[in-house]
Image (tube, rainbow, N blue to C red):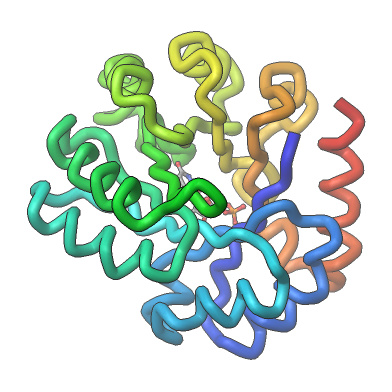
Length: 219
Ligand code: NUP
């Protein structure tokens, strides 16, 4: 199982410092609007140069196909992977997959990760009722990964059963209170546990990353 650092800090210096400090224990780095809107998309390049890790842009893209295509082009020029929403439907996700295919190559394929059920409380209101269908769509489209919640292990399990061998990217451990032990029983070698605040808000991010890496590597 792999550790994905969610680097949702708001300053370039802090981002680069934490990325470098934790890089020995982190498998891949995820950034999103907090950092990119604060510093610009070029931060992707800087993180990659400092750490030699793949960078995922968590933009939860959710627009019409033509606009999704533009967002994917700007993002995948820099990033290795992009996260999109599935609830906008197949054509919107496929528009991103088309860009990923065009921009990637054998040595460095670009990946499209799709959200199914989110981890926060209110995800049960609108997303949960359609999340199994979203997971089925993710499988049909052969996306490169799906996001599913560590805050609801029973749902994580159900979504994993639907998507089969598609890697799961799972947020919710740490600040959101997800039970890592339960999550470790469900996820496998090709899946990712996302930790953000549990690492970057810790008084020693390196030690915290080391701790999480050790816990998830036991399985
Ligand atoms: O359902 C989701 N929940 C979630 O927390 C989908 C996500 N992409 N995330 C992201 O995961 C969230 O935006 C943040 O970047 C990370 C979790 O961070 P933390 O709660 O560990 O700080």
